[in-house]
Every structure is written in C-alpha cells, then in structure tokens.
Length: 303
Image (cartoon, rainbow, N blue to C red; front, top):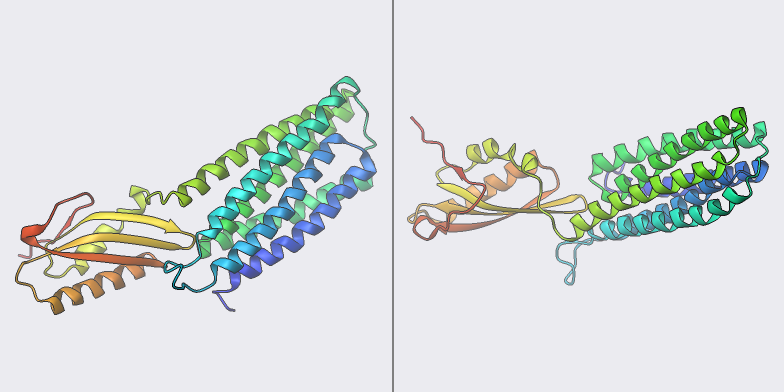
C-alpha cells in the first residue's frame, strides 16, 4: 500500500461515507419529524463540507516544496481544521434557530421504527468511520484527519444523546424534550468547535512542542553528540505531519568543519529515528561564542 498517499485516500473515503450518512439522517428526520433528529441531520451537512475541505487540504499538502514554499504545503491542513471549526459553529446556531420555536409549540414526532432504525444505522457507520480517521490521522501525523475524526466522534455522541432523549420523551410524553435535546446538541457542538479553533490556531501560530515531547530526545541527543560540548536553544514547531527542530551545537573552538559536519549528520539521523518526519536545522558555534540558552544537553564526561 502507498503509505504516502494513504491520508488522501482516507479523506476521500470519509467524504463518501459522510454523504451516505447525511442521506440516512435526513431520512430519519423525514420519517419522524423530530427537530432533534433534524439538528442531527444539520450537523451531517457540516460533516460533508468538512470532509471535502480535509480532502482538498490533504491533496494540496502532498505537493512537494517549491521556490515559493520551501517548507512544503502541509500547513494548509490547519486552515482546513479552522474551516471545520467555523462550520461547526454555523451548524450549532442553525440548530438553535430551528429548536427555539418548538418550545412554544411542542410537537410529538412520529417515532417510526424506520426513522429510528435509519438514525441508529447512521451512528454505527459514523462510529466506524471516526475510529478509522483518528487512527489514520495519528499514524500519519495529519491534523486534518484527526480533526475530521474527532468531529465525526462528536456526531456519534450527538446521535446517541438524541435517541436517548427521544426515548425519554416518548415514555414521559414531555415533548418539549425534543427541542431541549436539540439545544443541548448545539451547545455540545459549540464546545467542540471552540476546541478545534484552539488547536488549529496553535498550529498556525507555530506553537512549540510541549516539553514532554522533547524530553525523550535528551538521552538520544547526548549519545549522538560525540565530542561536541553542548546543545541548547531548542526551538520547535509542527506543520501538518512535519516537525521542525532548530538548535545550537557548541563545539570546541579548534574542531574542524568536517568533524562538526559529521556530528550534525549523526544528530539529524538520531532525531529522524526518534521522531519520524522531523527536520532538524543545526547552528554550529564555537565554545567561546556560545550564548547558553534553554533545553541544554551537555556531553557526558567519560571515565
């Protein structure tokens, strides 16, 4: 299997499944007339749009680096995730707009076996898709696939909540629960959208990797730095599936350029092994000009 092209294929499958689930959910709403199921169907419109955006982003990000984009095109995945978050927010307000009038005029939906069955089938398909997308996104370090997978998981939780609420309304006869469920669905969707915004903007703003991601590199770097003296001033960021690391390598003032280059090659190989997809940029400086900074790794003294 072509591992490099797998994220694009996964996004294409997501788009196809999202369209099928949309049809199932609108069928469930048509056969029941439930505003809660209508809100669930509206969210699926967002799923289709988001899956389409993710497919485009992954296709575009696979383009090789060029003169205008020397670091590649992978950051477009964060734009896709931001767009998905915006669409989630729009869907939430559309649901609220449809639900509020029902509080004044509660209507008992026609909970036919066909309508409920279509909703359950859509949830099963969505749950399978969500698990697949999150696994694929983590494996290939794709923010677009991970965001799409978490969004679909939210859709599954929403559908489950809707069905439980409708069952409660049917048993109690309190049909005002139908629009109330829709409002709760909208609030949950807004929360998910806010979380996606936060994560996506972190990527767009080149937020550094958390300390727990960098700490495991310390012993590996220490073992690969040879007779260099120190590593410091580590700077990091992610761009889609690629991690960029920059740091200063302090060497003895009399070390040859050839030897310093060999150490840099060894460090780059070590980083690539420990952090697949990472690109390292190393600045070599002699000991007497070193400006000691953060994330310090010093050569272990040999006995």
